[in-house]
Length: 112
Length: 115
Image (tube, rainbow over all chains, first blue to last red; front, top):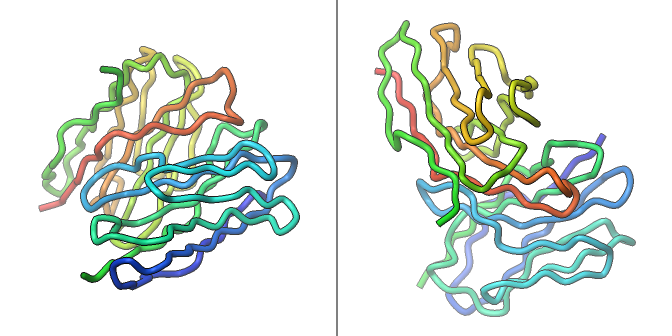
């Protein structure tokens, strides 16, 4: 079945470090891929998305490229800030399924 | 402003009581979802609804019930049969026209605590 695998957290970095959070997927057909962010005590917000292979989603300095050949959608940011501390979820959507398929989430901690 | 509203933000329940969590959206979305999130955990699907007067069980539906009498509203009832209801509950919605490309929009969540 369809699934999403994210790297386990927590990921702890110093401010201004380079960030990568890995996300790989298995899916029938050609899914759309999403990254969401959840700040403490809040709901999830869409961070970026990509709907076809080789698309790059970007927002707030974050980027992720839809790699069909490696079935990956890794999240990257060149220089993280303390305010980026949150939980990040990778998800996929397929046309035949009303459900979004979620990764387990990766907690990111940025230290000043 | 369009959005999805959950209420209340915090809810306390005595053991043996049923409680209902509200979820309202004015985005004209067809699909609505309820998720449960435990501390440090991911999202688990409780119920979802594709259309008014229709809904489907998710992975952890036991002890919960829902209704979808209006497109805008998808309330979740946590019944006394749910043995461990303390958790963070998230409601979400998506438009129907193209599920492939459309993201879910989330409410701010309801934190339910059994006292």
